Length: 230
Image (tube, rainbow, N blue to C red; front, side):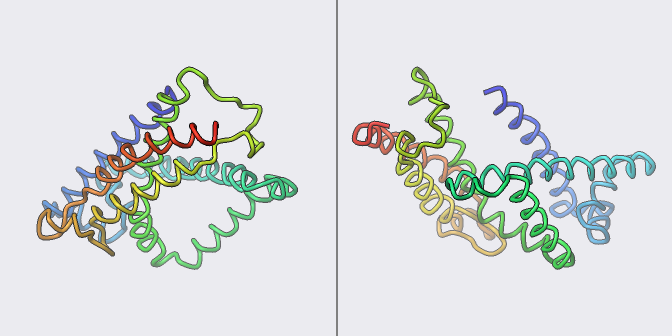
């Protein structure tokens, strides 16, 4: 729980600040921010926010290092994630998997340096609704189903003793397809429910996705535990 709040609070704070700056630049058309974004993208608008100029440049350098640090953690965890696919993947050392992921990302970044960022941002926005479903599944599992019994960490690589995952997959898909897709309002797609909120659509996908996940996961997990006993 400490880890959850340690990640949630700073993430929410920075997201709110970013939304305010973005609204100032685009909705209010505040010229200094808008011009900075048009000329230098996200880095330009961040540089325009900080004052004075010397501190602004220093802050951008520090932010660049923070991005690198975040990517290092992602590369490391990618090796762990790939090895979770099965025993066959354990045969390849973890650092090989992490290096391969880093190389693929590096090649994509260099090849798409002029347009990849915009495409990825738009595409990730379509996928991001699954995170609220995933969060609720973890919270419900931890606080409702595992509150007393806890977790048997010794069987982490024994599929026969682990949960089937059917309830989690069902709730995740239900939340995303029935809630996220129908309620999203993004550059590439506006869902049928989102269209009812304003001329450009209102993004209610995250609320629908979270609600549907809660409603579906709890009974599905009860049934899974009853018939699969794990």
